[in-house]
Length: 220
Image (cartoon, rainbow, N blue to C red; front, side, top):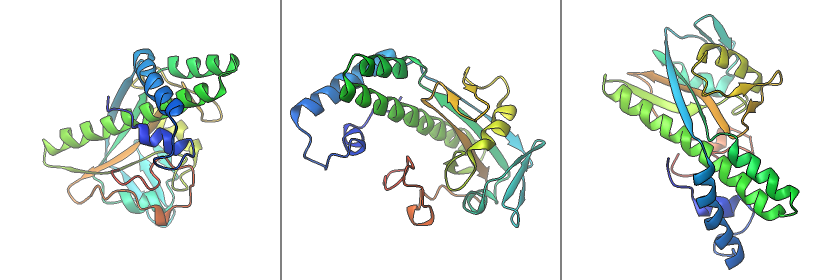
């Protein structure tokens, strides 16, 4: 797994850069180590051929399933010749530990652990993205950015279609009727593959999702 960024955790706590006190920074370092020991990461992806994009409806038809991608994601993926569906999770242990801390009255510590769990899950997604890029480069293909249901106006309900195509390759992540993944610290989505696509980074100016994991992070 990629290392967890202390700076990202501090930013997520709402503390300006350089203003975190020793108590906070020491706890972040302590709990990063604990979370790495607790986590049970799992990651994987499958590749589907012959995607069919409908630019007018902003839909993707893939292996018998229809994804309502929306304008932003459709524009980013429509030159793809193949689509990788991915999933990654850090397991349930970290979120269980966060709940235990909060139940014991250690609210800040529990929140720090929760943020670390989210960062680990996102780092697993970054690992998958890098692996897809390496695998596709081996056959002369490029990849796009990765996109997840719930971002860029892509309905989170499309998790249902995504999980149907993943089948048993789901890292034992369960999807609820409301499209919530369990364990919560899990990430799923799609990546475009082809000769004419590009991994262009994330342009926050075209998306109004303030909660986005990628917002204003320069290296994604």
